[in-house]
Length: 96
Image (cartoon, rainbow, N blue to C red; front, side, top):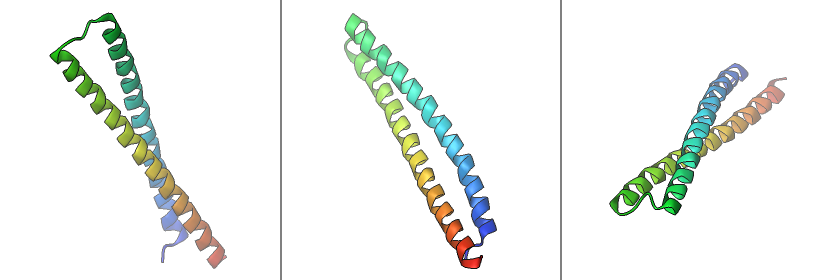
């Protein structure tokens, strides 16, 4: 059975992971947004054509998938924090 101290330590670890994944999501999301806007503007100006368009589109899509991955991991950490918090409250109520 998990004690309240173990759950408190795990919550601390999850808070660190949440901050890291939030930072990663902000950075990759910002890069994805800026690159998508640059590609859109370049496409309107006709600066990108032919094979280079496929290469650039692949890079932008990779950034988009990276952002989605970081966002999903952030949501997983949030759910784990809620679970650990609920377990900690249940443990405290059961012993106190």
